[in-house]
Image (cartoon, rainbow, N blue to C red):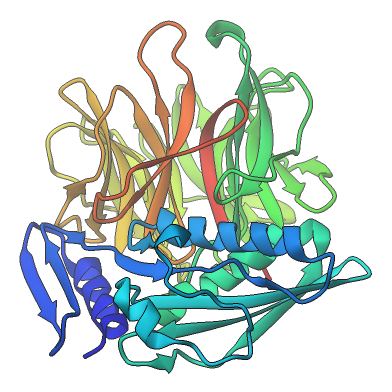
Length: 444
């Protein structure tokens, strides 16, 4: 069994594991991957700088190669071999690969490519090689785009490489909408912003001084729901990402409406509506109309999230006396409690794979991001800090992004990501403080 297949096997085991374990998969040769307590030994790979096939393509080839390497290394599943260790290089994209030279430095995957530029159009060709089996992994491909979009082309290449090696869909060619925060903590300006998954290419979607909260992408990434205080009380708006135009959803009717999400098919939204001191969950068509009340109790019920197939909703409620998680039909009705651990649970969100629910947990003075099965079993806490909250899933269900606020009067919020195994905690760099992330789908 070659190393590429072993990594795929390790990922499958890791995805299914929710308690510490030890497992080893080994090939008949020197290749080996060990998984112990949810840890995978990263796969060594090499990305020689892509060849420039036209005179103007050199800088673009450099940048594309570096973005691909950063995407793969950032997963924690891959380890880049530095160019200083190379015995040979790729000087001709069409020439045969010298497998022995790459095997000698323990490269187990090799990514070779070429870049051309003409009239502002960039074309990237690439191949992926399994060094120990001495064969190309799949067929060579190419992507084409504009100079302004070279980072996106690089993300597309990295997604293809990731998919071929792991057997999973990638998540690099995706975007995140979030709340950008500027100024002192007690007078912080908050605007909606959008960025690439890795924090690059930040663009602002709103510019008013009104407080905005909890942006949420539609399933196709074309629209964003969010809550704004510009009228003095929270109301829900929908924003078109391409044009940055927006309109009020008409959900409040004079009451506070907040915490919205789209249904998977984009035809309706769910949200919380406060009336008489408590809040219930409602559903209405995305184009307006009468709202359907889904819960009815004197409790605070909020933060609803659809299952991927749109048939069920998970939400938080204090109907039991403490903040806990519940699941009910998307049409309302009896709800089943699924959280029973110590502490309080909130902000649940269903995995795009449908098998897990991520949540925020507060217990013993600490905040955690965690996951559990949809029946509440196999709860695992992935993080712990002064304040972690608001999880959102990557498109492939492998990674969770969330907000972390530092302690103290001047504490600022930042975005972090973590693998569902609890490994590879990383900060996502943004120009200013940031909170409330919502991870969109892979771009078309």
